Amino acid sequence: MSKSNHSILEKVLIALTIMYELFLLLFSTLWLFTNNFAGIKNGLGNLEHIGVNETVTYGLFFSGVLGGSFYCLRAMYQRLGEAYTPIEENKTAAKDTLAIKVWIFWYFYRPIQGGVLALILMALVKSNLLVLQELTEDNFKSFYVLIALGFMAGFGSHEVIHKIYEIIKVVFAKSDIKASTSEDKVKENNGV
Image (cartoon, rainbow, N blue to C red; front, side, top):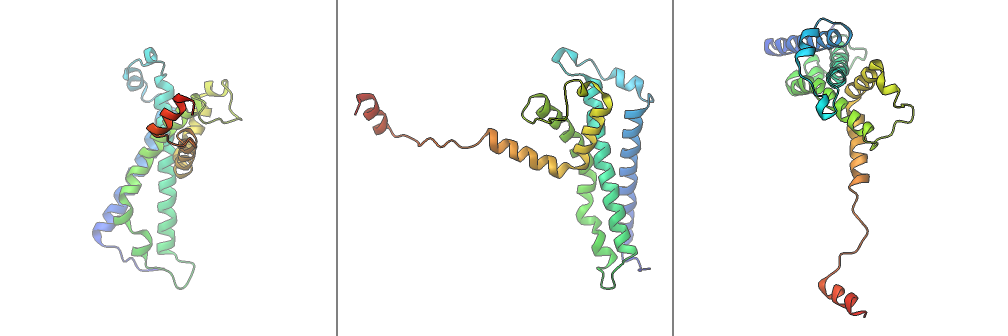
């Protein structure tokens, strides 16, 4: 077993990060699969006047948070495993493997990013800018399909971001039309 090279501050940051991710995981799970927060959910306001179902919206956001926090805990588990139980002999020091000071913002941001991307993914699918052939309009009536889609968006945030870039490149592609000058316009109008 390798000796810990982490400072007290790094150990505190690791513990805080794990507690934060576990809290998000637990809270999202309770929000999505229990009625523990029924009063809060009902008090969030009625968004139907703008065509948004708050149950779907808040459920989708928290399923993205669930996926993002699960991904972060998995990454933390893997990095801690590599740091403290190395399989290879010439392994990087535990302190360098985890690098909590470098990655802490990522650990705190990734679940929120997952929630936002889940909402954006739904907007892209509903607007037909992204077509998922396996999903029909009836599928979107199932809360579990939305949870699965949101979880995948949170867990696979990098892939969702790459897909958004692809959509942007298609929708906002540069045209092949040559820019014309005023001389060209005059010639065109005179029939020359």
